[in-house]
Image (tube, rainbow, N blue to C red; front, side, top):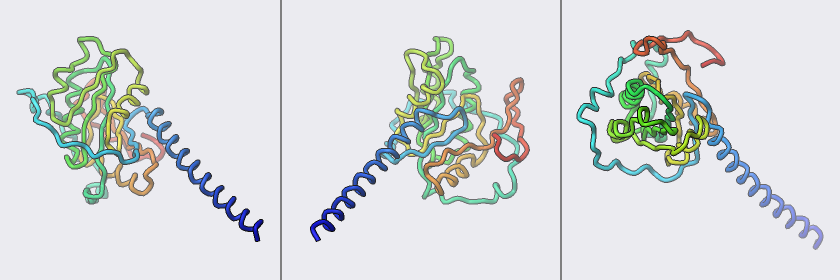
Length: 232
């Protein structure tokens, strides 16, 4: 009987150690996901942390509304996408992290403008612009910080490179979901809800949307790509 009891205690102890090791592995894996920040248009779901604080009074540029104007893409989404509805009350908040280096201010303003216009405000916690050591002619700090209350700005004193700059941005946000994006995007209507819906079924997923085309010479044009599998 004593030997049986001893084996039972050892079994319980082994299960406790295994459970602790499993939680440690999961926490380490999430840190590796943040550090490995994928290259573009990517969503990561992180463990919930603190709720995002309410916005404080904000000094907006007098011409901010005009600066954030962009050419809305013509409707070209599949019928199934247009007709589908989502329960926003069950979706988490999102922080969009955009590192930039030697970019066009106008294209960055269009990117931010499309995010503000085409993202439900209840889902968008902040747009964090990470200045990766730009020179004075390409930092645009005073302008970017005053575009909208949800736009945040962080400057790296020295250039870190794209991946590390994304990891730096991830460390600065408290949102449960992080979207990594480039500074020359136009997001379409209801771009975020389908991504969050995919995450809801498997919170550890990394979700990548279909990325349509903004021609380099005419970036105000939005070109839909054909349906595809395994591409973006």
